[in-house]
Each structure stands twice: as structure tokens, then as C-alpha cells.
Amino acid sequence: MLAQARIFTQRPASSARRCVRPSRVTVRAVAYSSDISEESYVCLGLAQCFRKGQGGLVPVNVIEPLSASSLECLANGARTSYKAVTGVTFGDAMRRKREELPEVFREAHFCENFEFRCEAAARTWSRPHAQDNLMDIVPLGKSRSNFNFSLEDKRVLNMENVVNDSDNIKQDMSIDVYGRKKADEYAAKQAADSAAKAAEAAVEDKKRREEEDLDMLLLA
Image (tube, rainbow, N blue to C red):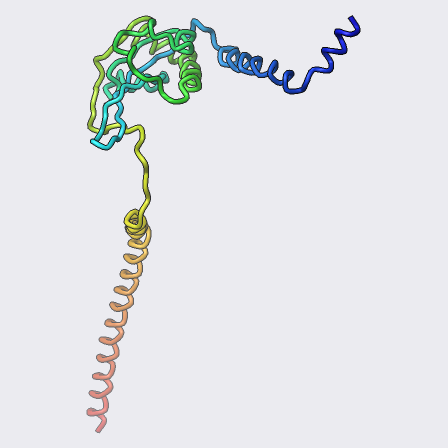
């Protein structure tokens, strides 16, 4: 027993680290559902997105968790890129169980940071307003697709925002419109008021001189 204990304590540090790594993953997985029941409701949307390729825009379907307020906006007629929405359990969503999703969802890609967004969305569905008023929009296990679907504003996943000199010029113009323009208008008004006062003073001075000349003639 003593020899075995010595062998155990003399294991290389690298082997000890290999034993610890799996436990970290396990702890992280448990942390996601530690305070959210696997049976909790969460809403998933099928978004029509695009990727920019050499030949143009390529359509891509993406599965994204929806917050309670987002689904409420969709139900009220807001334009959306979501072609369909379904209600699932939090546990099925976190495990990405495609077989529990409607067929139209099964070939779609899961969005980036899906688990994090899924947990955040699930929390919104646990609030009183969502529980009392929004659960019937898309009930658990059901799907809905009659929203105000529109591609007028396309969602491009790999769009790069490149800033150039023309953008800086536009920004300067906007500053000029909202800031300097008002200052210029105020300065112009001040100048106009000063000019009007100067004109009035000139008229008064001319009138005074004419009266003085008339008095000089009368006294002569």
C-alpha cells in the first residue's frame, strides 16, 4: 500500500493536468442549466440570412433563439427575416436536437454563440409578462410561419464595415448640418441685427445733420 501511494504521488504533473481537463468541460456544461430547468420554454427562429461570395449573395438559413420581446414584435406585424418560429424545451435546444425541430429547421445552421444566446432568451421567457401574455403566440411543440417576412433589408453575415475618407467627409457634413449650421444661422442673425441698427443710426445721424444745417441757415 505504501509503495502504491508513493507511485501515485510521483506521477508527472502533465498526467495530472490531463485528468483535470475533462472535469472543466463538465462543470461548464452543468453551469448552463444550473438555474434553468430543461423543461423551460425557449423560442427558436429560422432566419433567412446571406453570405457574401464572389458571385454575389448566397442564401443561408440560420437557427437563432428569440427573446420574448422579439417574438412579441413579430406577432404585432413587424418586418422580419424569420421564415418560421418554433417553441421547444430549453434542454432540447441546448443539445441541438434537430429531430425535435420542424423539418424546415433541420438543414439550417445554428448561429454563433448559440448556447449563450439560448440561455439569455430562455430567461426572458420566465418573466411574468411573457408567462401570462406571450406563451400562446407559438406554443411548446408548435411552429408558426405567418409573420411579416421581408428581405428588403437583407442580413449579410460576413459583411465588413470598411471606413474610408468619404465616410469621414459625410460625418463632417452631418456635424456641419447639426452643429455648425445652427451656429452659422445664429451668427447671420446677429450680423443682420447689427446691420439694421447701424442703418437706423445712420438715418438718425443724417436727420440730425440736416436739422443742424437748417438751424445754421436760419441763424445766418
